[in-house]
Length: 118
Image (cartoon, rainbow, N blue to C red; front, side, top):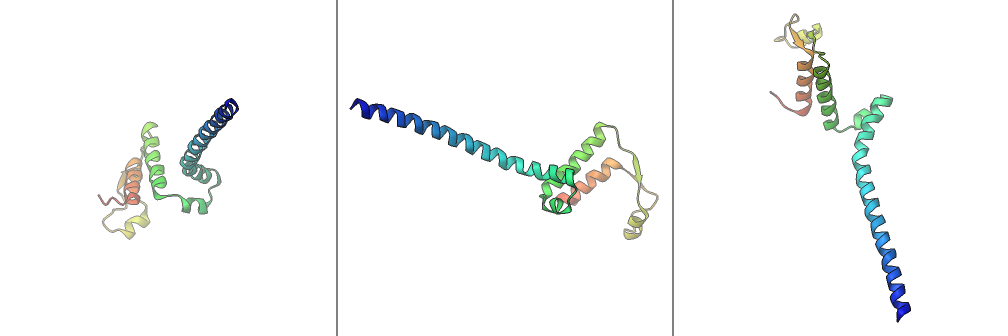
């Protein structure tokens, strides 16, 4: 009876250890899933591969634009930018001599990509 009790305790300890390891691996797998998108983002920045860029979720590109606007604001980079001639020819309501701030253009692009019309 003592031998069975000892074996049972040993088996229980081993199973508890395996359960903890399984939980740890589950946590690592969840963390890896979170890091996958960050790795895609980093892969594009490092390689510039268009296939990687095409595979990025739209939310990541929207986040790029958010970060670009924040970067400009934090560093005081907000020059006035003249509307390119091609744009004023394409959209007659935009005058070629008009100027827009860089941060406003980035925010406008972000809203367009996110599907916000106004």
